[in-house]
Image (cartoon, rainbow, N blue to C red):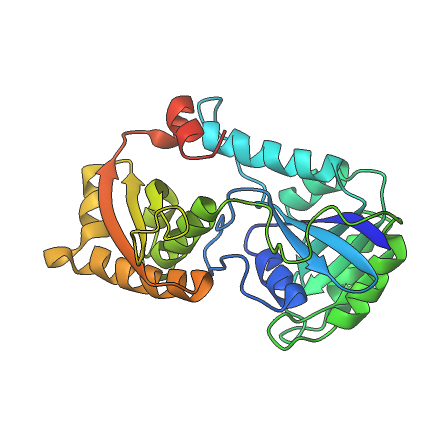
Length: 295
C-alpha cells in the first residue's frame, strides 16, 4: 500500500481545482473562471486498491500590497504550509503560456526538494510544447505531462507518474472520506461558488460566507430537513445591495442554486436561510478572518 500527499501549485485560475475534480471523478472543489476562487488549502482524498493519495489544492499566489492585507497573507501562508507537507508537487501551467510571469519565478523558489511534475492544463486548446520549453529554463522537472481536465485527456498518464513517487505507507483516511474538511465548510464553499457564478467584476472577491447554524436530521431527529442559516459577508453597503439585487432577486437566485447543490451533496432536503451582512474591511480584520476560517 502507498500513501502520500500531492500538492498542486500554479498561477491563479490555471485549473488546479478542475484537475483535482477530474482525477477524483467528482465535483469536490468549486471552480470558476474568476481568479482567486480557491481561498484555503483543501485536501481531497483519492483511493484505489494500491494507494491513498491526498491531493491538496492551493490558492493562486496573492499580490500583497501592504501588511494590512491579512487575507492575502493567509492565502500565501496556506501555499507555503501545503508545500512543506508534500511528497510530490504538481506545478500546473496553462498550455497556452508563452511568457513567464512574476508568479512563476516566485513559485520556482518556493518548491520543496521533492519530485516536481510540470503539468500543462487546457492542452485541448493549445500545443503545450512551447510552454514546456519555456519552463524548462526555470526548473528541472521530474516529468512533464499535458492534460485536459475537460476532455479527461492525460489523466491516466499523470496518475501513473504520481504513483512512481508516492511512498509506501498505510492509509490515513477511511476510504469513504472524500475531503478532509467539515460539512459546514463544504456548505459555505457551495454557496460561495454560486456567488462567483452569478456576480461579475470584483464583488465576488469581497464576499465571504459564514455558516451561523447547521442543524441536520442526524443531530436533531425531530427535523426532516437540513437547516442552514448562512450570511453573505460584504465590505460595503453597495456590495450588499448588489448581492441582494432588485426586489431580492439575486440573493434568492443564489439561495435556489445553493440549495439544489446542497441537496445533491447531502442527499437530504435542505432549508437554506440566506442573509447579507456588511462587515467593513473584513479582509483586513484578523478577528473577522479567524471567524470566517481564514486564519
